[in-house]
Length: 56
Image 1 (cartoon, rainbow, N blue to C red):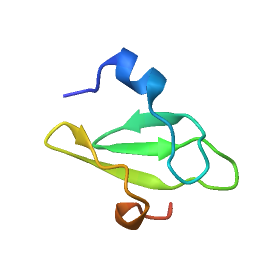
Image 2: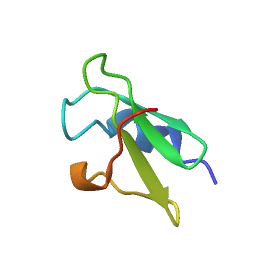
Image 3: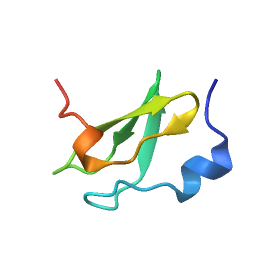
């Protein structure tokens, strides 16, 4: 289930504060230097830097 548009507008990457984009079951940082990928579990974004992964 996609996240609500209003929620995506206020969420930001905890590492660099850039906006996030939803793709599949993940939120991807749009920051050029960062690019971390955060999981979404049970429709809840897990915005912990320790849980994020680097893009492939």
